[in-house]
Length: 168
Image 1 (cartoon, rainbow, N blue to C red):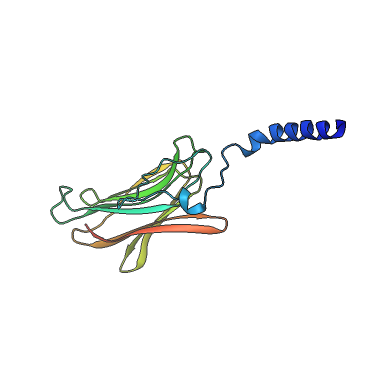
Image 2 (image 1 turned 30 degrees about the horizontal axis):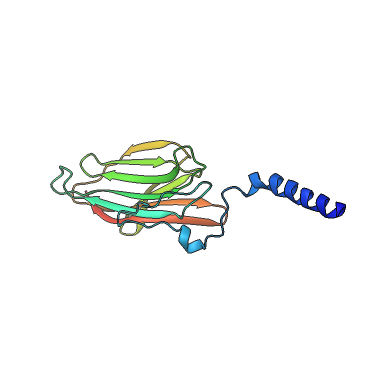
């Protein structure tokens, strides 16, 4: 009887010691933790503590930007990460047709690589370090079609999003 009491007490101590390590873990199937995604690519489900979501690409185009012949647009990658101070990690590239300006913001822990393409060939490219923003002006002729592409690379993987062909 005495041995059994010690075993029970020891088991209770082990469970108590492991409790901080197992906090937030559940036996939920993987598909249940996947958030719903709206057409704009934003998550509709609130992340659980300690959760990191999948990268969600989104692309927008705006032909009502004040430039009669051009289209502005954004290519964005984002995911929720409750360990991040803002709760979200993202990288985006924005092309403004009227100002011939490209703005790249990186709110991820990796460097973002951006590309401007013309007829499938890379015309300009660059890297933005984690947490920074870069603005560039380019000599893009009125009516010229360009493409924008944004990629994040990390050990063992990558994710890219493209905004097709935009007309300046």
